[in-house]
Length: 242
Image 1 (cartoon, rainbow, N blue to C red):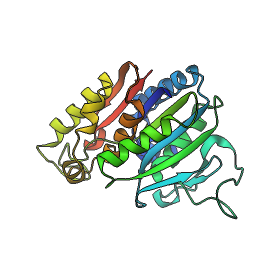
Image 2: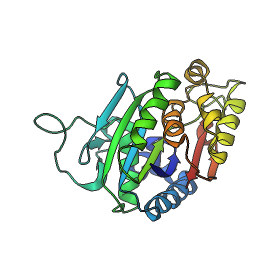
Image 3: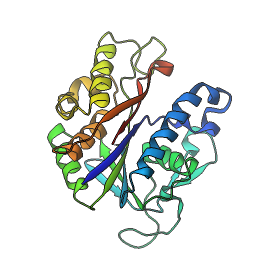
Image 4: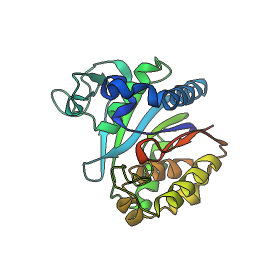
């Protein structure tokens, strides 16, 4: 059963070494993420599953101990999911590298000194259909008596002319709908976010948020939006469901 969830943005810029001189610009976002992770720990979960967008097709699982890297972003920094390099996972050898969103999540957990429960990761293809996302979420919610989710993902990347996707007049309405749904634990509202507009607006959070919606179906959680903004023209949200 899902007992708590935190929603955080997934830009590698949250990692100060990646952001370099611009790091202070996202201090308020990092602080909100740490607050949300503290609330997750207080929910006393049996298991934490980190969910984030990934380039791989469908769904990809990542065990505790999987390693992520920020070398593609110009810094020699590694991070470990759950903070323990245990080499566990299916098949011989080291688990495959974490997608960027889960590497950011692993850094946030290390930064917050997470020790509350074992951790695993789920990478979600950004093209995955809403009904498939919801089904994956329902399955996650049954994996332990008390499941918590850390859900990574951004809103539109089209909120200004300097945004990664340039300016798109549809972006504010898309982000406003997402923010309302995240604040209100509106499962139906999250599942109503359509795949094609999300793709056009480069909203990487759509699929992970819909996994969260599936996990929360039939539950009785309350929501709180801890941060909402559009630094660099990208919609960032930090929300807590508990």
